[in-house]
Image (tube, rainbow, N blue to C red):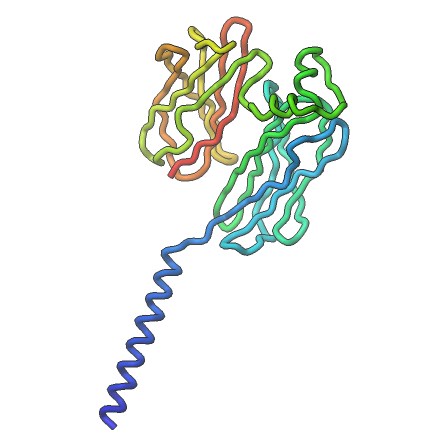
Amino acid sequence: MKRFALACVATLIVLTAAACSDNNKRTETPAVLDVKMEIPDHIELNKPTKLACVVTYGGEKVDDASEVKFEVWKHGAGDRDMLKAKRDGSGRYSVTKTFTEAGTYSVVAHVTARDMHNMPKKDVVVGNPSQAAEKGESDSHPSGEADHQHGEAGHHHDNSVSMSLSSHSVTAGKPVTLAVRIMKDGKPLTKATVRFEIWQADNKHEFVETKEAGNGDYQAEVTFATPGTYSVKVHVEAASLHEHQVEQVMAH
């Protein structure tokens, strides 16, 4: 009987240890909030278009997200639309928008669920942006392959200005030198006024002035206080030029 009792105790200890090991493994692998965009690469003018995303957490569909909104803006324009999405079921959320001006647009899905936030971004081409830039008017005809490539560039605005951020991944809570290189017509843009507009989700926007470092580079010391995804809007002013571009930075 003593041997049988000892064997039972030993078996119980092994099973308990195995259960604890499995629990530790599950604890070490936290679930992730994932957002997949369902937005076409090209959108026709004056045609209602559905912007959608599918939200999952740990591989399971999320139908009770706290908030899902789509932020939409045209490159080179100052106005932005913040559109509240409706729940379609099976983790899908959507909103319908009609685009009335040709150009390249950015769409950011702001998703809050399970005490987490995710902000995936996608650039899309509406109508024929190259002809709209040349004629100062929209064109409702579908764009050709060359126009699609023009939209894919993403960073080039009407004044042939490009902006390249130094980093899209930083350490939260530690000062970092954030830099951007500004080019115009393929040459470094100097003597410009450049500042960063930084915000996280719906929090307050912070404006940081940069200093010119030469060769079209402008930089400033910035601290991303808490982990998460931040939006960094680069404002550039020089003579009659006023351009801006939004980038996403992840703080770990």
